[in-house]
Amino acid sequence: HAKEQGRNGYRFFESAMNANVHQQLLLQQALRGAIDRREFVLHYQPKMVSPGGPLVGVEALLRWNRPEHGLIAPDGFLALAERTGLIVPIGNWVIDEACRQMRAWLDDGHRDWTVAVNLSTMQLTHPGLIEVVRSALERHRLDGRYLVLEVTEYTAMRDAEASLAILNQVAALGVGIAIDDFGTGYSSLLYLKQLPADELKIDRGFVTELARGNDDEAIVSAIVALGKTLGLNIVAEGVETAEQQALLERLGCDAMQGYLLGRPMPPEALIRSVAHLARS
Ligand code: C2E
Ligand code: MG
Ligand code: MG
Ligand code: MG
Image 1 (tube, rainbow, N blue to C red):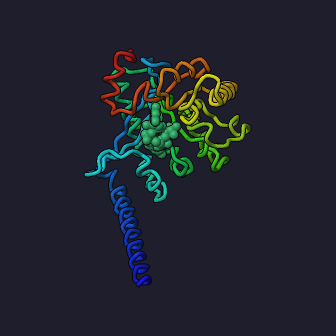
Image 2: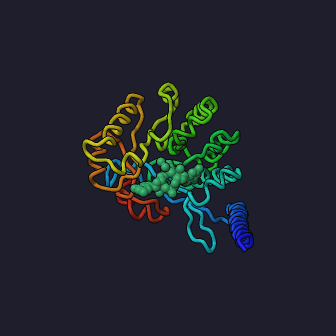
Image 3: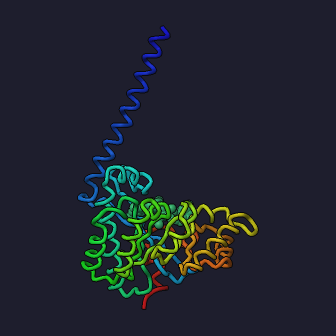
C-alpha cells in the first residue's frame, strides 16, 4: 500500500515537472516570435536632478506585451532570453527602438535629455554590438551623445579585459556609459579607474533603508566620494520618499531615479508629465 502511494507521489511530482518544462517551452516559443509580432515595448523612466525637474535623461525599460498574459516586466522573461541567446536580437531591437524614440523627441523640440539602454552580459561581449549601435545611430541620424549604455558592475567585471575593449569602442562613438547597480558587484578600483564610464548608478539596495546616521548613509557617502574622484556623474536609483531624496541631495548625488520622481511610463505619458519642463 505504502509503495502504491509512493508511486502516486512520484507520478504526481513527475507530471508537475513536465507541466513546468512544458510551460518553459511555451514561454520560449512565445518569446522567439515576439519581436516579429511586435510584442515588445519600451517604457521610459525619468532621471532628474530633483523632483519636478529638470529632466536630464530617461532610461528605457523593456516590457513584453504577451497576448493573454498582459504586460510582463523583465524579470518574467529576461533570464530565459539570456539562457537561449534571444537577448541578442531582443536587445538589438531595444537599441534601435530607443534611438528611434530619441530622434522623435528631438524632432519634437526636446533637446536636453539622453536615453539609456540596459545591456546584459551576453550582449556586451557579443561581437555584433558596436555595429548594431553604430547603425542604429546612423539610421536615426542621432549623435552618440544622446545615447547611454548601462552595464551592471557585475557585467563589466565578468570578462574584464574584453568588456574594457568593447566599452572603449562604445565611448569612441560618443555614446555614454553608465555603471548600473553599483555596490552589488565587486569591481576592483584599478579596473573601475580604467573604465571609460561617465555615470555611476547607486543600487536601490542602498537607498531603500537610507536614513541619517545609518550604515547606508555612510556607504552612499563613500560611493559618492569614490565616484566624484573618478569624475563620474552620480545617480541614485529607487528613490521613493522625500526623506531619501533630501538626504541623497545632501550627500552629493547629481541626479535621481525612482517612483518619487516618476515611474517607467510609455513615451506619451512621459511627455505629458514632463512636457512643460524640457522643450527648447
Ligand atoms: P535596472 O536597470 O537597475 O532598472 C531599474 C529597475 O528598478 C526597473 O525595473 C525599474 O522599474 C525599477 N524601479 C525604478 N524606480 C524604482 C523605485 O523607486 N522603487 C522600486 N521598487 N523599483 C524601482 P524593471 O523595469 O523591472 O527592470 C529590471 C531590470 O531588468 C533592470 O534593472 C535591468 O537590469 C533589466 N532590463 C530592463 N530593460 C532591459 C533591456 O532592455 N535589456 C536588458 N538587457 N535588460 C533590461
Ligand atoms: Mg539600468
Ligand atoms: Mg539599476
Ligand atoms: Mg537593478
